[in-house]
Length: 284
Ligand code: C2E
Ligand code: MG
Ligand code: MG
Ligand code: MG
Image (tube, rainbow, N blue to C red):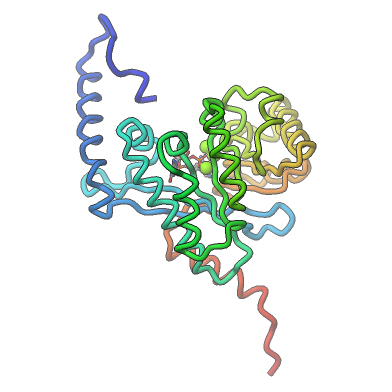
């Protein structure tokens, strides 16, 4: 992680580190104006029902279309944005955009998932921002899902917990993202008011060959069910992984097997294709 190698290192100096720091500083500066310059976009990836193979909804994923560097992936700018505070404006923009877009979908049963940073929970009036995004867009609260990473949850205080509870009272759903990469204890999981657990792709990648991963995924799916939560497998890329997950009983899949994150236009086309299938046939 970028934020781990900054400052305070003795005798570890290398020119490449210096260069790295410089690039980082430049990127940080550019990040500040990037939103106003319209350089951000949201791409959407389907979350697919294991039963029907059809989308239950889409996850909004941020893209920085940098004029020189091309598409800068979120792995390179979210941490920077969190450190500089830009994430507050960026996160609000994501929420508002995703809600407005989802409100235009023909299929009113589809939900939209938006990633939330822990910084937004701590340093903004997130509840008000979410409420406003919903009312301005007209999106039904039950169609919005907020994804919060397990590590972010871990750092929660009572204050953060009350934000999370207020969000739920708005009627939105909450998902615990990248589950298995943090250090959640079972008692902690029991207390969390979440509707869904997203199983990190590191547990999916070696299915079905690595039997310990099969056991782990099975245990997570069953534990979640016991706690009244649903599960999504992240990073499903192969038919073999899908078949294994079906057998385990995981109800929702996300991954390149079903579709890579796509821009708004491609997403609209996918939704239109999908809903046409359910239209009653016109008899001549
Ligand atoms: P995430 O929320 O866990 O999103 C899933 C990531 O896995 C996405 O990466 C997606 O493109 C990738 N992915 C999906 N299916 C597959 C697959 O089959 N194989 C592989 N190898 N990868 C797959 P992406 O778009 O690069 O986003 C990375 C992370 O950045 C996200 O992880 C999320 O934590 C964060 N992020 C993205 N957009 C936002 C945002 O608007 N706000 C915040 N706070 N974070 C965001
Ligand atoms: Mg996510
Ligand atoms: Mg995830
Ligand atoms: Mg992930």
